[in-house]
Length: 215
Image 1 (tube, helix red, strand yellow):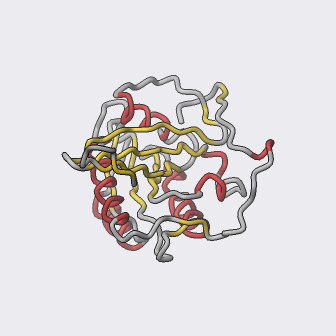
Image 2: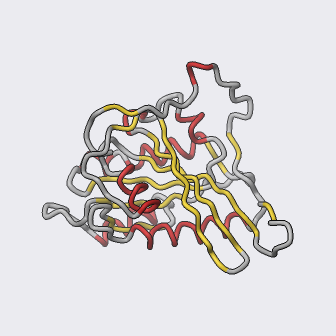
């Protein structure tokens, strides 16, 4: 947190993970939120990429969200420990039209919990997004999802669509509020494995992309 000289506005920078299986719409959600745009032809994310969203939270608070787009094929690999470092919150995305992507949600959640915690050893807050809710075949069981997020200690869930711009801003507003509440405890996120790595050149996050389906 830095205070702008000559002003009362405080600047905050927070790292948010956006994870889930491949092609669930992670890149599309980030693009829609950060730029207001949508394209059906995003390339498959390789490794990790990130974007920044600036928010004027109130007259005294400016928030920069650094959204880390973690490739779905990285699932539970050793490099995710590097990518998760210093995250204060996470979003897990699944595709409402692909049941297997929902079945993987708890594995992603367990992966987060095993690799990064807040400074007080509590889990980082995680929001669940049920994406592609505008597709005809999407099946939203609200009661089941309400129970699921309570059972697995998510902070909440939203049905979303990057294509139709449904609940993207609302979900991020909710998450930002939770992040600011966490930050008030003055417990910065830290890596569980404090011995972690000076990265070798060939281990650094790869921001390149290759042709593939929407991610």
